[in-house]
Length: 274
Picture 1 (tube, helix red, strand yellow):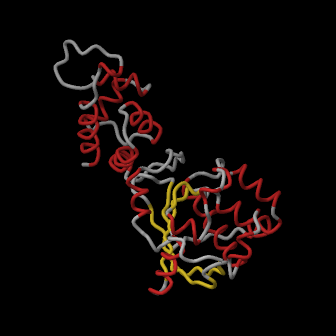
Picture 2: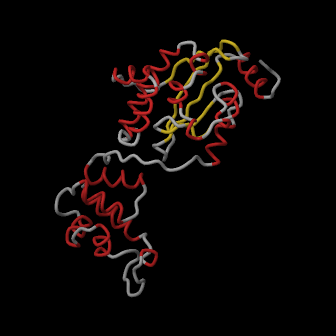
Picture 3: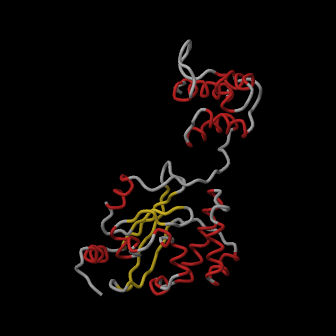
């Protein structure tokens, strides 16, 4: 039974918590962790209702109750999702929030791709990490201020992208459609309103494309560039989600042949010049 499984899960999560770190006395406790009444107090629900949840009684809880209980038990995002699946048979509603920069391990993944430009972006298309190949082929993000490391700003408010992209209009339509789908999926519409308004005011092209209302998934495909040193070059792109980081995606651009791969390596090493 789902409710029984929910009760077992709640009890296990409750018993793993340290009462002292949460301001409760450790003395005279027959079992480890918090008491039921303490979880109920933290969740602002009745002790009777919380006890019924652990006992598999009382019917399905509301999403609001599960949200309160998940906060009271200090559940991670993954644990919260599991709680909702047990209690309601579905995932919780999207709650968008950023969680800081990338770990050294993620940066190491980028750096290991020596001939493939790659970067990690947020839902609002801010570039937060990149490798050396991306810096020499796409954009030298290190030379930009953090606020300028945004693909949409570079695409619509700068001039370099219009000369770099062989099909600027097609790329612009694609990025805006993916951006719209991304923010809706992540529940980030309100968070990106200032960026959308900035782009609408600063670019008639963005306003026109945004008003079309198209949505797309990123998927994979080909990106064609007219690079000032490499000349015309075609890259295969793919997008990857990052487990545990719903606010981030990794984009990888692979050269389509070994000759271009070696030319990218040479450009990184400074053996090619404009």
